[in-house]
Image (cartoon, rainbow, N blue to C red):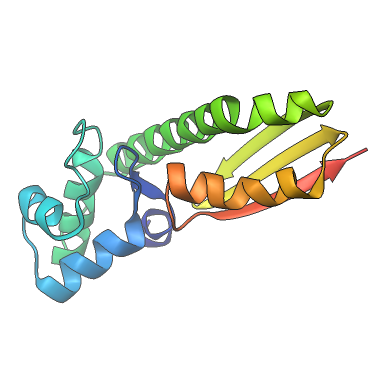
Length: 150
């Protein structure tokens, strides 16, 4: 369970990944969502990530974490991260690609790893723009791979 939590975007509103939350909880001995929010900003937006932060706090304290709740948190996190990635690509990259006859043909998110598949007349500059675009608009800790398909 710990490895799954350590590799995902926890707070989608503010772009905070789980490694930062784990490190802050351990290093600063944080004990509440409010303390985590103050330390790393996670949880300071819509509040959807509060259950995941509570899960991290419990894990660091050595308390058992309900497996069904952990799975629910993981799935919610993945869905929300995918939505943020797709939204950023649709609003910031797709129009630029379309102007050159290119398009986004697929997006896959797994933890902090994002795969973006592009097709058509993709210029190198547009392809290079994907990584900073997603890191700036979703989470700076994302590992982004761009594939250009024929």
